[in-house]
Image 1 (tube, helix red, strand yellow):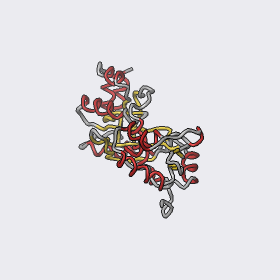
Image 2 (spheres, rainbow, N blue to C red; image 1 turned 120 degrees about the vertical axis):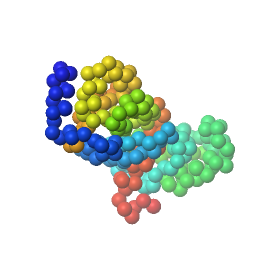
Image 3 (cartoon, helix red, strand yellow; image 1 turned 90 degrees about the vertical axis):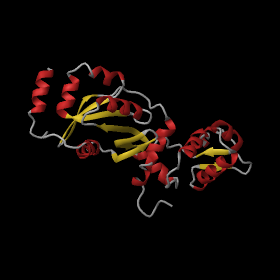
Image 4 (cartoon, rainbow, N blue to C red; image 1 turned 135 degrees about the vertical axis):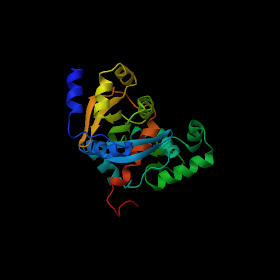
Amino acid sequence: MCAIMLSRMTTNQSNPGFGLEKWMTIPAVKWITEQGLLVKVEFSTPWGTCDVVGVELARTRVAERIANGQRRPIGPPLRIALFRLIPDVRTGQSTTVVALSERVDAPISSVETDLQALVERRFVLQHPDGSLQSLGCWAPLHTRIVAVELKLERIDQAIAQARSHTAFATESFIGLPQDKAARLVCSGRVREVEQAGIGLLAVNSEGATVLIRPAAKVPSDPVLQMHCVERFWSQCVPRGRRA
């Protein structure tokens, strides 16, 4: 089977080869957008840059958030962490500035600044007694987050980076030129990809094909995941309606 795969892929006229890794970006973006996802390239993360990230948002949740008047992004990671810790209004529970400051281990003054922004942007209710409740019943906003790390060579580095992307992505892939991807599948190194819980894409000039699907797993950093999704929010709100 591996011999047949190699023969088919290396003789495919749509795979002339890539001189630079950045040349692989266009077909990778095409593969993601064809699935109906929003896409960003050169996506910055705390440990570096991910070549391509795609996000699928739940339309009903997007509509609900807009209807709530929450047209602006939540903001930086600390603000997101605070938002996640505030009980939803539907639970009947609440919290306080002091309690939040202790939980995130941040000065009360810093917490108050971010809470003010959350209140102004209509994500949080602050009652006369100072108690706080969240208006985030639409969360989480996404259904999928796909990360793709593109490499011509340096498979060790590609695997390590794709594994790091599982901190926020529901599906993390390495993307290799399709002949190299086929050879990897037929080699002992395929176990490294599978054990990392990531997937493998074979990329050619026309798009990409999934050779290995990533293991189903929950991203390890929910705050980073939400921050990632928030960076796509401006693509969801009609111009002139973000105030």
